[in-house]
Length: 415
Image (cartoon, rainbow, N blue to C red; front, side):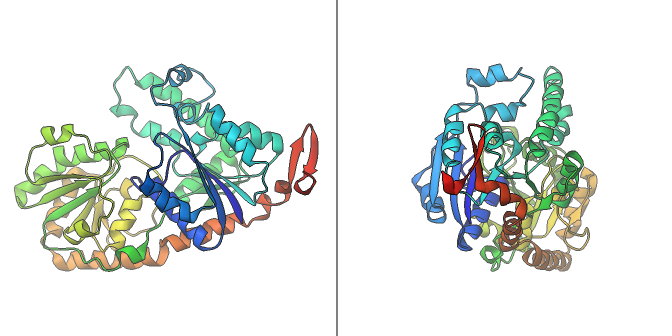
């Protein structure tokens, strides 16, 4: 198939779960012989390394610059009722709209739009030409905005409530136009289906299981590992909770425990705020395997967020026992006590960690069961096959062979 795929960010380097998902789906679909043009609006231009990673997978890589976050246009759009903030920041882009319109003059088997918040520049062209498209939604943005509401300063909360209202309206508007909607988990699919009144497909998040198959964690190391992109509030909050409430309790029972904190955009102020030498501030690593080999537990005390957690899947694929919360495994059909341990109570999480580090046999049980589950159910090849089946549906075929020109419907062969 010829696929026109749009993204509001470069999928390399894979500094977040969303970028990791995009890169591996592109890679797997390219390996299956599909010809993909990737249209990206990005706040950074592609480096040589990004081009070397992406261009072999694609027929074309088109990268357009996104205006700065603090642009006056974004500030003006903040009070406009039609678009939520994320849709304004990633939309209202004439250069992107024009490029997309030009690309629509070519014949496409599939048009895939990633994220409802990126949809604004494409809406009018898709409507005027009556072209079907796939919308892939990674998170329910209106719900995510509610999750962190109580953590905001009082003066920001009315605006956050207003923006959530805008996003609910925007989600309804965008999701109702898509011919096929893709979610990353059954939970999200059910929520979206309630909005659209139509069935929603699930294309799971995955793991490159072969990449992690030789990892054997150091179950006696006393090291906990946390991985996250710190541009996202849920990861910031998780570290604050861990270091203020959970780790102090663990250290009372086991002073040897260490925490390695890994991820993109690590706040420099944290090193000054928490100076305990048992905290290892590592930052972004392109390859986690050596650190996984030298860790005993993957610790993900997440209290906010949706979708499903690629970092948790990667830890399981590497054989790292996982201690987390209900949110930490949201969207994953894993079993508590068999594949992971979890609690939403900080005291219980501290007790779980303390007990597990003294039970290597229990760590091995969790490690083996989780690795087997992930490699069977969540390899990226499984996700790519699910997306490929969505792309093959008749709903994306019949109307796409025609284009509306001056009110007249013309076939592509006539153009």
